[in-house]
Image (cartoon, rainbow, N blue to C red; front, side, top):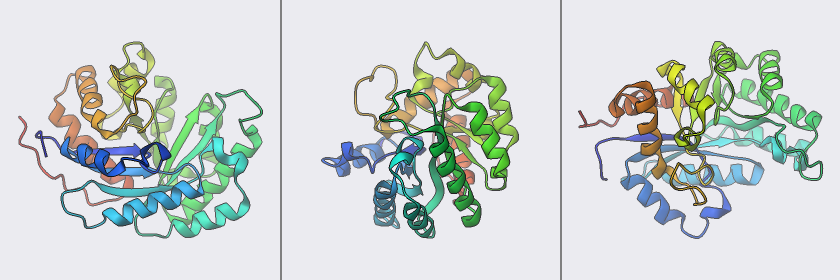
Length: 279
């Protein structure tokens, strides 16, 4: 493994078909870049099953990326979901490799009614999965796009603060960030923070408490600056961390250590940091 830092990528999709041909090679490169842990996030039932299989296969492995699984139905997949999927999802959540329910939430960005589920459908499955998370006592990974107020209100109504979680790929205002933070949520930041034009996101990164900040890539989506149009993977984490360190005026070592601890606290994992020789 190269480099002094040890990273935790809190949001990946290595269960995505785009990694099907060369996943093992990608994961070796990711590990060699210093990424030692990640969370593999689901978007439907089948991807949840794949996430659990990846996590089970990595458990106890030596010199390889250690996966944890997050199972859930993405809001843009809720139109294809059925009640039986929720039952199977709740059973799947009992697997010891599953550390959260997600990614779940609301997405009002896409306006095409032929491909975007109705708001009512999205909200129904969002609430149902929040209740699964509370029964399972698992945190939640939230996808929220152009739906800040509805997301916040549903989180409050469903008592999501009891289990906590993360607002993945945070894109709202500093004022809205305060409201999510008051619910005890973390905020996840990925490749978007490296884009010079992402002024609102960068402003939030400067002000969010360090103990509520998480690193993520959303691989294979949202590559960092200089890699747009490419398939993303966890090797982008150091670039994201460097941008955050610059914006906050702190060291890479601080970003690395604190975000590792935050990720372990979110997912309720052993928080022992593997160590860093960086100064």
